Image 1 (cartoon, rainbow over the protein chains, first blue to last red):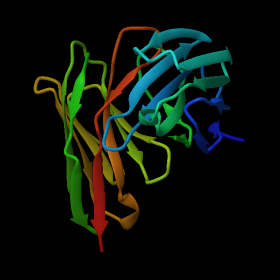
Image 2 (image 1 turned 135 degrees about the horizontal axis):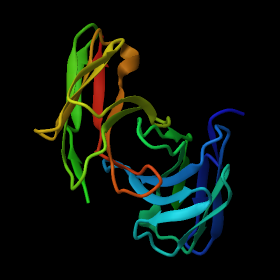
Image 3 (image 1 turned 180 degrees about the vertical axis):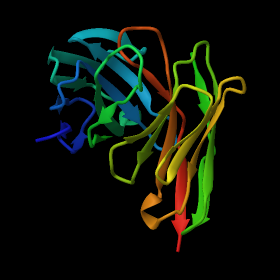
Length: 115
Length: 112
């Protein structure tokens, strides 16, 4: 496997379900991110982890719970979601270093539908 | 916080040149990036510009004017495979991790 992988690629869940999204990066990066992408809206940054420490939580509802056990893996735990949470959830990684481009490498995303 | 504006849609024909503009309002600025996303695919990095002027990379070029808070992506010799969404992005925050704020994206349609 190379790059950034995400599983599952598609997920349908009810509002009372609990599920988890998984992201793995094989690039040796030290920062990982969760984004939400809804139709016709900008990519919304949800969480940032740098060296396994959460550095940002952009006012995300508590029904989304991130977990970063090491610098290669990132999870997003979901519970009691709402239909408006249906979206494409993208994981990304980058090598945080001073100067240079802010290049982030994205996974293929998980298409989530909440019924 | 930061906001970025770009056109929602652009249409052009194969072989043509198209320019996708991006204006931004920021409290700080750490460079303008461009990403491409095909339908059903992941965003992929195209370019990064931190200094004023035009940078060319093959068929794609990126321009930045920091005094005008404006940049654009220039695509030359358009090909059908260039049909995709293009996002501009600016680094947000001064934290240790690189955080990007993205524009809403411009859907480019290339016609035969």
